[in-house]
Amino acid sequence: MKKFPAVVPIIALLVLLTFSFPGRPVAGEKEGQIEQHLERGTALAQKGDYDGALNEYQKVLKIDEGNALAHNNLGIVYKRKGLYLSAADEFKAALQSLPNYFKAYNNLGNVYFERGYYDEAVKYYHKCLAVKPSFADAHWNLALAYEEKGEKTRAIRHFKKFMDLSDASTYVALAQQHVDRLSAKPEETGLEPEMTTFGENAVDESE
Image 1 (cartoon, rainbow, N blue to C red):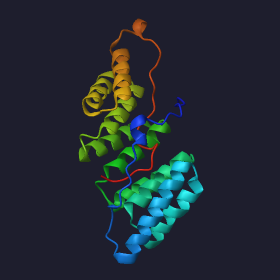
Image 2: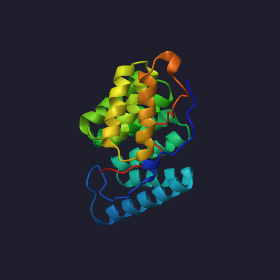
Image 3: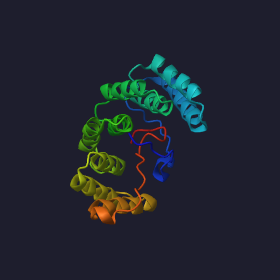
Image 4: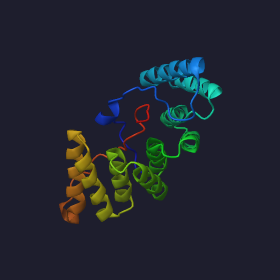
């Protein structure tokens, strides 16, 4: 399996913290506590204090065990720590609480992609796009997975879809490099473009 550069995608840095949490409604005082723990967890994760972030997200689940955002963010932190099985379990728990949580599908696909299980990755990226067809990140990730599987036509299709949907000029240009490379004859191919997936590099929120 290829090792991917530790590059934080530009669009993944545009983190907008919201407090309209997916999952079951929680009343009054407990809702305020959940907001505080999620905010602290996000701040700690962004500083690289993953153990501190885990502690804050776990406090949320003690109040509301079905909080999809807390499960999703736990999954992201576990993935950053290299704990892929725990990450997958948390993304699946998020989806049990909120079956249409498209970003959790995308993040789950990224777990399988980075472990080299491209068929599983493709399955979850498609589930993400079934909920949110306009989610550009999932088209990028799906294109990468198809590229790894050697399915050039499908890879090109999703790179082009990403280019249509994304306003991140750097990655639109990079997607074009992938398309050019995949469309070229073998003797015409140059350096391999970047292969970093989108979605797991920032603590996520629902839309």
